Amino acid sequence: MPIAIPSFRPARANPPRLRGALLASAAAALALACTPLPVLSATAAQPSEQKEYVPDVGQEGKDVIWVPTPQTLVDTMLDMAKVTPKDRLMDLGSGDGRTVITAAQRGLTAQGIEYNPDLVELSRRNAERAGVADRATFVTADLFATDLSQADVITMFLLSTINEKLRPKLLELAPGTRIVSNSFRMGDWEPDAEETIKQDCSTYCTALLWIVPAKVAGNWEVDGQPLQLEQRYQRLSGKLGGAPISEARLNGSEISFVANGVRYTGTVNGKQMSGSAAGRGNWSAKRV
Image 1 (tube, rainbow, N blue to C red):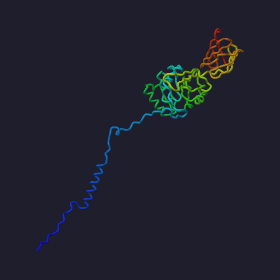
Image 2 (image 1 turned 135 degrees about the vertical axis):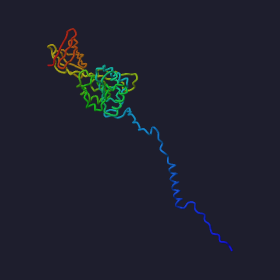
Image 3 (image 1 turned 120 degrees about the vertical axis):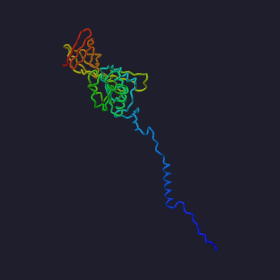
Image 4 (image 1 turned 90 degrees about the horizontal axis):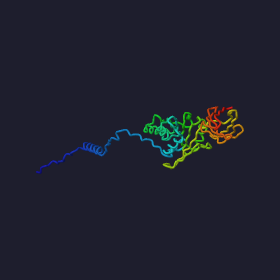
């Protein structure tokens, strides 16, 4: 009689639910293993430093583009103005601050007027590095709205059209105030001096100097004689008595002219003038 042998099925090693759970866990582990870990470094751990502002030559400004004055011309401009440590200088459109800083290094009290606040901050840093921040200061301002009356010397690198627009304001400054421009002129107000440098300078290499003249146009009396003066900036014409005057001009508050072959030199002080006449002794005049 045959013996009935019971059928045998080997048990599954992992039931379906358990196998699904294991596969899910394995997939999660694999994904975690493949995810790149963040790399920490000293640079990443610290806050990023702000990059210092660097101006571009030719960048647009309010009235003019920015082009730096060559250092050799900066020195020439200050030399032409015969600056001394007693002078107060204002630089109109001061850019990166080099003219103001150079003046401060010569002992002057100097201030830059600049419309671009980034250039003002750069100038302040440059003054700090040069060790002259106590004498070289900078303000963000419109040069047309700025009081210039405290300046003994004014420097600028602006267009001729801007210079001419500023001219009425400059002519109201105290007689003897020195104005120096890089290259650009002042319309029909001719400069008192002009110098072009040829070494270490390829563009914008001319310095122009004006000295604000006293106002003398009108009628005066000189030791009993009438003196009639006509004035065009620093140049004069007119008559002393009935004789025409010649070689007449102003250098700030200093006046000189020739009448009847005699050279008169003197100083203007408001409504009075006084000085000496060659071979004639002293002379004086008052407005009438």
